Image (cartoon, rainbow, N blue to C red; front, side, top):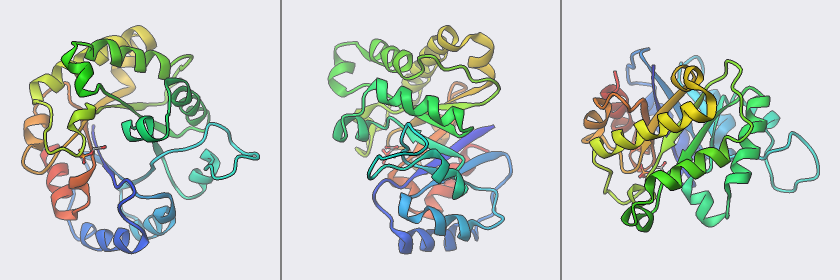
Length: 248
Ligand code: PGA
């Protein structure tokens, strides 16, 4: 089943999140696409309440790699589970850039998420300079190997989001065929890291980077694209629903 994830970043507080939900809940969605809303930490609880019996899942934008302890300012996976969160974005390029997240911290977070039965949405992707130097494959392989070191899924699933850094928030998405090619490369790497059976049964590879209602269909028809991680276009409920429908 395809998965479409709304990443609201640091854009919506409680008030705006609830305004989105009022509109979003009026839309009729098919059960054929898994949908996830990822609000700010401060809005998680209210969004969960507003979702009620709606099948849409709740995600978080980050998590710490320990369950409890003296870690001022951090959020534990147990705290997220308490609020009904079922998946967490890890290693988004904005966190790698601004918070200096490394493959090692990504790895620690993923291992602890899986221990707690929460699904990681692991972000990978190259910068424009790396792409121009033909380093896309190498950079992504490094991120996958580092981030998934010691990971065994034991029946759990993960999503890997291919998000070329130059395509995020720029209105300049990758060409769908190019994204498809990188997704196939990721799948091959995952076969080596996790084993062929796990890589094909337990991992969805989704695309992120300037996805919108106009271009979603052209990505959704790429067989290697299992869904989307959507930033800007997920802030508008009508536009987000169009993206979900492109995956039906
Ligand atoms: P965008 O962001 O859709 O605004 O490009 C995607 C993301 O950062 O997850």
